[in-house]
Length: 340
Image (cartoon, rainbow, N blue to C red; front, top):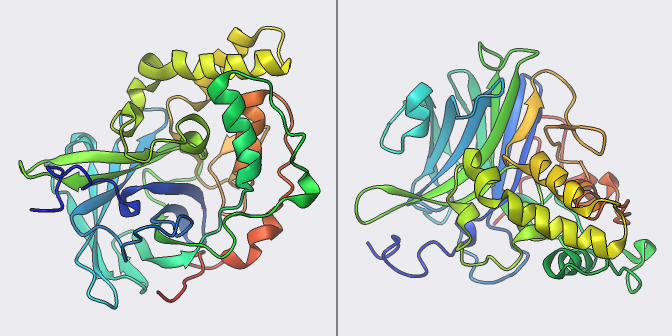
């Protein structure tokens, strides 16, 4: 089939690029949100979700090294109005097997609330709740990539503009009702993966997401999904890439003069972001903040937190949660749908 991985550009689509991952408490349970297919580049934007792909939420329970649950969402072809969707769950060893089918929990259409056993779901095009000034990010990118002093002299917080203003993404929202896994006090670790069918009949992991801003800060040029981080499992992160992350951070903080022991600080950052799994204590307020990372809400200023972390100095992004207050709601599906 022409859109499988046998062609060089099969995987290079915004439909498979995971722009964001959020985990927070909702009206009835724990909410998981992933976003793909941003309009920010205005290049080759395909409508809807990839009909030959899969989108998976991977759930680790109470610090487990491997996922114990996988919620898999698959879509039919875009028919000009929307797409059929199916939500399945895989448990135990099956949650780690692409060949396992799992149990179907819900079926429906994009743009509509879909209810099923233990969950409700929604998928469709939304106003992007993410906010950052890419000019500021570029200064951090430069310091991390080149090991040079952070230079923000040409950028002023009072002049900050949200580069993502007016942009849209395709979003998948799952709200999981409390059960034996999602009970108050349980700690879960969440990451997401996009996968694409291959001509050989299997599946290839194309992209993954856990902590916010990992790709924009550490792999900003990975537009062809060639970085090994795309296909790794989080349990391999620290061993395979910890030294690279630690070294990049150490170079930036050494040049900027924000740490007396840059190497030690670099490793502290590597161990904080690896494994790249977003942790959350079920039933508690979510917050991706400086003091603690506990899930992530649609309002959290994650870029400010992550940029400050990697250069070991406070960075004022010039933007606040009010920047995107019209892109989120307090009721399901918590995002703001838009017409295609």
